[in-house]
View 1 (cartoon, protein in one colour):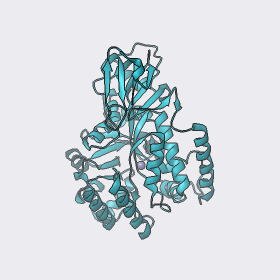
View 2 (cartoon, protein in one colour):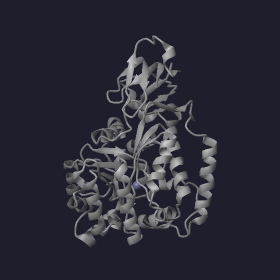
View 3 (tube, protein in one colour):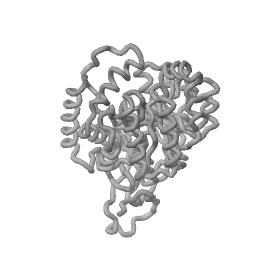
Length: 422
Ligand SMILES: [Zn+2]
């Protein structure tokens, strides 16, 4: 299967070079794209899409997402207004994820994948929790993602917060899933993971040649608890379990780090994922890239699925606390492709593309692209999306499922979920 993007302006996502060309797109996990000068025999192609006046570039990927939070928007307020980060988890998120069942996990995954597709992301790294429906939860998410056309790197968030049954459930689900699929070993955060659980997770990481995906020092509480209990800081604790040794490991947030922890991270192969808007929402502090090295990527932390917004937030909110310019914001936005490529993770080849209908009022070229990216770009301009060489969004409409029917199912599940919450 192959199709042509006719008369496109291709923006090379690495060099930002602009090329006027027709683009031949091949389907498949390792599918390539090819520039062609002339369309010799149009009849042999499945489809020819007119891209006159439009921009084509590589699609996006989310470095840290949470399917479990997809049905949270607009839900009733918690019984007690949270006063701090730990209470936000306790009264909001740990109440929501405990109420998730088979159907609401599927609804959450469909909603997440749809939102990602329509915002231009064709790959998602997710961190999932559903303590009362663990076994098989990752398969439900994988299936829903694939139905929409989104590639994925999933994990289950193992934690001691709900007792032994939940710990074993998380470890078993991880082993079961990694036996057959690409994925990571998820841990909630240092403050809810005992040494015994962390050791078991690190063993799974080694056994499957995987990495750990964990929240790190999102709030100062994580550091205080770690020091009180273990006499060391969070990154030092992770280093002692060998978690920083995997180039697949992803550390979410990393807000409250000292110089020694930053140095440990900059010398390691693992990755840090910044989620600026989520940090602003929880009022936990500001991300600072200083001393962390180059392995920084961006996520949404389940707040939304719009990576252009995440990049712009990283730039604007970073102006005061982070030494960030347009180029840094764009590099962090695109670094997720480097992470996926370095680790031989499937689903992010060059045949993952977005077609932007961006009616710019000022000239746009290689030299001022970053200016447009920060001040002009928006997910609203994403007209079409191609995932693994397959057109999944055309003229802003999802082709893989009926959007209205799917959203109706998702809304019904949201209502049922809210009804089950305490
Ligand atoms: Zn998170």
